[in-house]
Length: 503
Image (tube, rainbow, N blue to C red; front, side, top):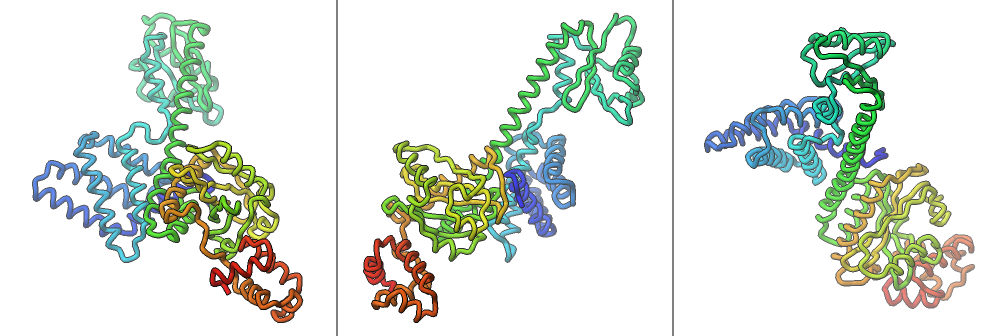
């Protein structure tokens, strides 16, 4: 199960890799055809395309490490190539390579939209890795130390990054003025940081005057700084520099998290925009919440402001008939009623409608549904159309029967954006109707049988006897019928049923 948004999107990347490797031979042949066409036309991109084709053939078709490490390796190989500097020509080459893959996938008899989308997402991440210097979202400690050693703000001669193994300290890497040190720095080791610092100082030319070594532990590492200054002069500067480095890393991590939910929203939007009917839209929206977010089940409901009730539209990885049989007045759902009232108080032109997270579903939903679907933690995602200022319904999401979970900020944001996109699509297919209210309520075959007998004048006892049911069961059916038809009594239910052609 995908517990985080990163894991969910990483799985889509893995699907993209699997699709490419499944069509390995055909893709390689198609790339070669493209390259021959460019060569024949003496196109200026021919040489670059050939080099890129060779690089991709080596990286994409061979089994490797995890997706993140693999993407970084592809990006590093691309950036280190002398002819692959960012340019319009290289963007053209990159696009040509991806389009050729889509052509091969499209020709396969079993190709799906998900195959194309996984390939497209994979290439977008390869592009980021190839043309961005901060693909992995992590600051470069090596570059930071090099800049710090070269800084004129504080005279630092060199910086040693230490490693510890079997109780002894080693020099892992050196930054700054190090031409006087032995080439094989790995031979420098000592039992203490002080002793290792003394060894390093012993190699320095005497003419450079008296130097001092200041140790500084930071996270999992220890660094030695060689300087002319005293501790109280250097340490504040170093600590401030490392704090800025840490803050930069946090900012990059936040940017990375923001990009994840934005990626998910883009994938979801492309998925649901393919809908050509209301029913398709309902199905795509329900499956999309599960396909692009770390959830396992989705139940989609419509909301009627006129009747102040919600009714089931579709259940993905749930019993669809059970979901469609649900109809509840929000007066019986205090949490939902309060939420709707809050939205009404906010007035028109609401930009964002936040979801509701319940660590325990029993806090907001009737016990019968909690037990029926084995609900634990849930998210209630409003399906809201900002362009029409209209609450259309909601999606109830969870990670499977009896499985609790927490809701991170990136998933919270993504769920809210998904709800907006879904609302706009459903509004487009509502045919101008203010609400997605079905023309007739959905009654089960047994409920229709009970309603027919009631319409014929049968009492509860008579209906129970003819259907071989208990009177209590028949009463439950009658109550469900009245609720679904929004009828105050049996007579009103019969009139509506005859009018709508149910009986």
